[in-house]
Length: 374
Ligand SMILES: Nc1ncnc2c1ncn2[C@@H]1O[C@H](COP(=O)(O)OP(=O)(O)OP(=O)(O)O)[C@@H](O)[C@H]1O
Ligand SMILES: [Mg+2]
Image (tube, rainbow, N blue to C red):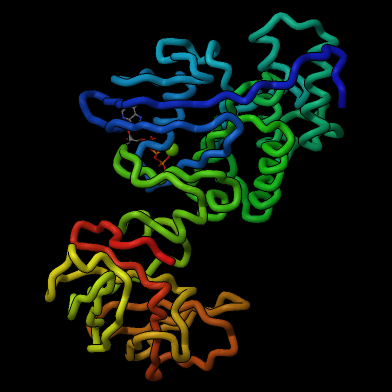
């Protein structure tokens, strides 16, 4: 839809963090972050609670001042600029709508406070955003007359009308129920496709991160653990932390020992005694060395396909199409496999799980991945 104030398309901007640190009361919360987000990219921050995701986003927004380092937006150093001067708009978990204002007034508010636009121009932009977010029939309602998902769309609308060159989202869907979360997630994906604006998005939700992101940034304790596309992080986690964090159900970890070495290959002994040959930089390893083997539940097979681990099936969880089977390995580890309903399974019965070599990840004692997966 064309608005009467014909204006140039929004220019997507890069966001860059250079050596950014943030202390709160002498306590380091962001411990040196270097990151470049490309113009138009959809970048998602994930990590455990308290790792600094919101703080990092607020540093980009200008709601927090960096203790050290620089923030650049569109190649311009904005470290000392106020939030309003940065060309960003932020959408929070709580919608923070004005209860006494209509949807129209709430969306217009971002514009009226900031720029000198005529009433007709403001109205046109509000209607354009409302159309995009399917809010047009609701423009005269008050926030209390809306569902949670509709309120969050109003909050997004308020950000859209400001035509920011960067959108920042801090867990915008976490107050919504599962169905609305799915719908609103699709709307955000569509919005990104339509606007092609740079988006930085914080979430706890694996599905949101995997489906929305061009690149995911995994944070832990105020540092970046790894940056990569969803597939890269899933296939080639750089360390135990990322391996355990990305993917659900979680990757299994088993203690193993180096049995023998050959060129580019290591043979490891699994709990229970089976030996598995895996690609690895043999020169860096020594016989007897303890390692951790990682394998995702969806990669464990129930028929031949690698070394096997035997033990009782302790628990079976129904997921509908699939089931999660938990086997107690000889060393006490609970090993989880995701299998189709056709695999015969009974709690308390003996079980066997096969670990296909090409699906196994190896980590050294520091938790660093030994090889790229395949
Ligand atoms: N204004 C503040 N003053 C003091 N400490 C703060 C402040 N804001 C955040 N922190 C601390 O900084 C750390 C990171 O907080 P932050 O909100 O960035 O985490 P988060 O990754 O967003 O967590 P969550 O997933 O729970 O939202 C936490 O330990 C938090 O207690
Ligand atoms: Mg947070």
